[in-house]
Image (cartoon, rainbow, N blue to C red):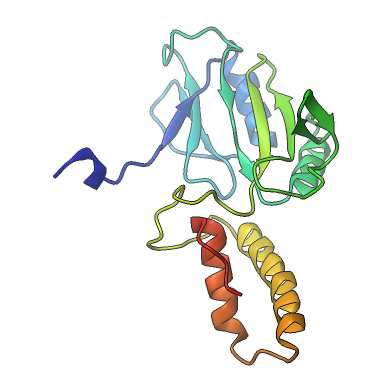
Length: 196
C-alpha cells in the first residue's frame, strides 16, 4: 500500500484568534454548528462542510489575523447576501482579470472565478469562491454526495436548466431525465464530461 491508496480528508483548520469568545460569536453568525470539544477549544462546522474551524488556547503559534481560507459556495450572490444579512462586511463580488481583480461576476460564470472576500475580527481572511463544476481529477469519481439540502437543491436547479437545453437540442422530451440529471450532477462534482 502507498500513500496514494490512503483516503485522507481535511478535518479541521486552526484559526489564530486573540479573543475566543469574540471569534465564537463571529463564526456562529456565519452559521457554524458548535461541536463538542475539550475545554479551552471551540470548534464550529460551516453548514454543508466536512471540514471544521477550530480556535482556542495554545492551538497555534501563528499570529492572530494571519489565517487565510477558501470556502466554496454554489451561488456567490446568494452566499454574499446571506453573509451580509448576518452582519458581516463582505467585499463586492469580483473575478480575476488580466490586470487584476475586476468587479462583478465572471462573465461566463465559470467555476472558481467569481469571488467575494471577508475577514473575521482579527483579520483572518476568507475568499468565497463560486464552484459549480469541479476541475477534472479534483474529486474521486467514486461515491457522490452533497453536504446540505441547499447544495443539492442548487445542483438540481443547474441540472434542470442544462436538461432544458438538452431537450431543445434533441427536439423532444426526455423520458429518462432522472438518469440524465444523475449523470450531470455527478459530472459537476467529479469534473467529468457532462452528458450530451
